[in-house]
Image (cartoon, rainbow, N blue to C red; front, side, top):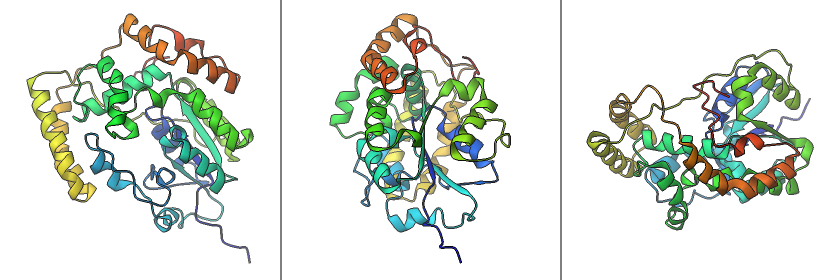
Length: 321
């Protein structure tokens, strides 16, 4: 009689936030040989068998209630998987945090790791837009919010607020390769999810040892509409931030249910399309990543010249390359 498998993932999608990890997870979950965790993003390896840090940014105390940090709770996520299914979970912050990278390499020595990366300026802008449109980001100007990162980190804001540092993929992957064999790691790009979904999915399935040609499409991401600044937006955002703070004392589903009408009202005022960064602003932000892009090219052996351009590659929702 075969020995039951330890209830843990066989593969993880580890990065980066706002780079299409949710869309890739949803696509892989359609494969009959895949068992995907619920929640998709348990964040277990961010915690080291201890409660998450007491992050202090808007909404942080509320959202971290959903982190799964007890080993028995994490294992329970995978207990119902069939013996023949490949088990996955997708927490993009695993690529970002050093302790998570090293813990995964040590505790899951056979797991496959998929790092999804995106133009770091576009990723940061999408990250800011996500938080702004949810009423949590208090700064209506992206470049200003971007440059507040050091101050926010010093104040204990959670990783999702680290617009700049989350995009240092060269540094992150260089460290990951020191602790995990290269044949366990697949680096894919956001634009491949957008422009070549079937080919990309076949490449991922081959890497994971799954039958190819089974899943051909990738769902669109859950993108937020752009919410223009103004008195109404300001008022609703303040209520949402206050509610998120109070929501830390209630079960997460209670606050999500209570906040839905407010976020819906604010987002219903959104424009048809998000404003693009002007070339000068984008160029100044690209400079922030220049040294890390050099490192990323050395580590991966790939060219990322297009990420140095002064024009955006666009969003998944727009299907622009």
